[in-house]
Image (tube, rainbow, N blue to C red; front, top):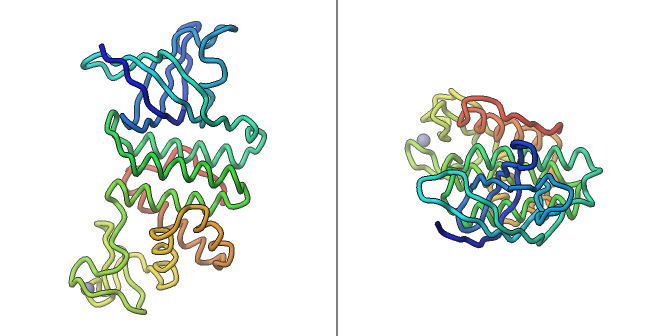
Length: 245
Ligand SMILES: [Zn+2]
């Protein structure tokens, strides 16, 4: 039995038996983990408010070989989001990101880039709730990229030609092709949409959201349609939670 300590972001929890909970979180050193927090629903318990969704904690847990479910031993709040709990739109956005992290992350596989990206997005949306939509787009682009599902935004998947000013097309295999190679078949992706997506690849979520305030409504809508389409195709279903945009 190994005792492990890591930073973790609480994503979701379920009641278990009378006094316990199963908690799902994204951890820095072990990726997605599911753990039992024994006695956490009793009035006085060692976990306090630390297991509320979207809290960043320092977690110590026991892991048994060949068991997926770990056992929470000790938690310490690093960042609570309790103050934001009256903002329903923000909570829906957080739940959406949490669900996608659960859907896309294989259990017990550390992914430091994903962990840092997720934290930065939760942080940016908490700091500036008005920028939530832009942060969610950023999150979608980076989640797809880090999990290997974002198409190459710069060159044609078929002829390797660098995209110029032309409209390009998203094929059924989720890759982008120039107009010649695609014969105009697939979902059209405009130049302004491509360049907006490329901006997300270069900036922090806060900077991207700041810049997105100047981006047209149409481009934002197209961006949301494209990321949502790719996510739906990868999951082979629609995400459970979808924030209104
Ligand atoms: Zn081509």
